[in-house]
Amino acid sequence: DDSPGGRGFDPINRSRSCTEILAKASANLNVWILFVLYAASFGVELHIQATITTYYFKRFRISIAEAGLVSSVFGLMNIFVRAWGGMLSDTMYRSRGINGRRDTLIGLTCGEGITLIAFSL
Image (cartoon, rainbow, N blue to C red):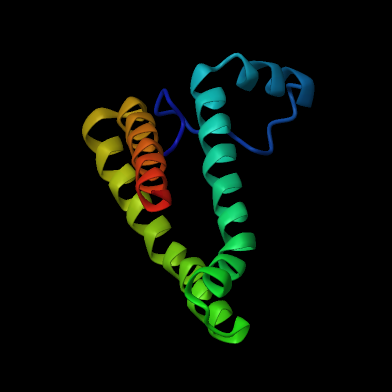
């Protein structure tokens, strides 16, 4: 159950308009934190995936095919990393509720930033 109050919602309920639902979601700080963090992490992922082949090709002087093969590992790695992040988030949700889930996301995103800075040096 991902609702902050531990209450689910009936997706068939048509008593509220889409605008009312959007206004209520937009007023929730957790929604905006998730929006910013997800935009930042997914944007970085897309940028790296788009440029990493060229980087390997120029930096390590390997063929473009080899660089593409090596850079595909980054995309494949995300299959496992996303699952592990989800499991950690679920664990934190069970112990601390929605705040634990939010704090896990913030911590992992900061860790991603620090790691990317270290790799760029």
